[in-house]
Image 1 (cartoon, rainbow, N blue to C red):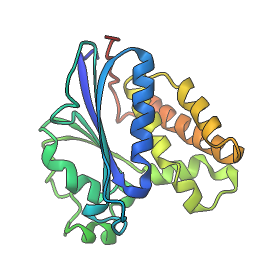
Image 2 (image 1 turned 120 degrees about the vertical axis):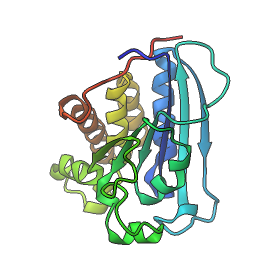
Image 3 (image 1 turned 180 degrees about the vertical axis):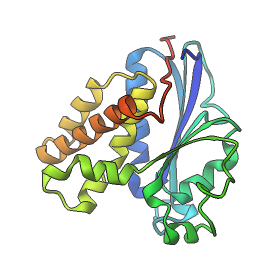
Image 4 (image 1 turned 90 degrees about the horizontal axis):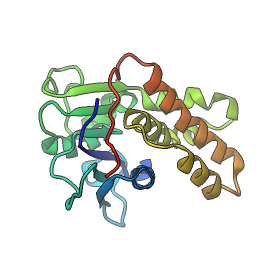
Amino acid sequence: RRVDRVVIRFAGDSGDGMQLTGDRFTSETASFGNDLSTLPNFPAEIRAPAGTLPGVSSFQLHFADHDILTPGDAPNVLVAMNPAALKANIADVPRGAEIIVNTDEFTKRPMAKVGYETSPLEDGSLSAYNIHPVPLTTLTVEALKDFGLSRKEAERSKNMFALGLLSWMYHRPTEGTENFLRQKFAKKPDIAEANIVAFRAGWNFGETTEDFAVSYEVAPA
């Protein structure tokens, strides 16, 4: 489907790498030739406890096939890595928008931390949106099972899985991100390779899953 502009917001815990994810998506979008504007939103330097509302970090990117001047008001796509990210950002998301949710984080404790008594994914409170429930953590750990990483280390690459999925959805180039990861983790080639595998797994997930029937094209400006 061709669209003339899109606003995407990546949101998660401070440790989820949302700034890096947004940054990479921005670089790919710039190399593709879209006009763009970004709005990184960092939490305070003193990190709030994981999974709480003050600890949410987000990165918003507006890109288009024409000149744009603002990072956008309302995200067409929200990527929520945990219940806190969903709760902190849902008020900005217009009806009918797409929300990609990491279902692995929607367990009792993380939901209780932000005041969800029932799962918003199941109680009908999100019926106005196009919800895409994706077990991001599980899929990432599964993709990296041959690397011999601890579960915690493997989970760290889930932001790259999310980036791969969105790169598929919006036809972003991928070579730049793969090269970037090889340079960033030059001293730890196994970590670089794990991130690249997670990134590709996200892309392939978009390609093969029935849940994402539509991909979008935003022509260069």
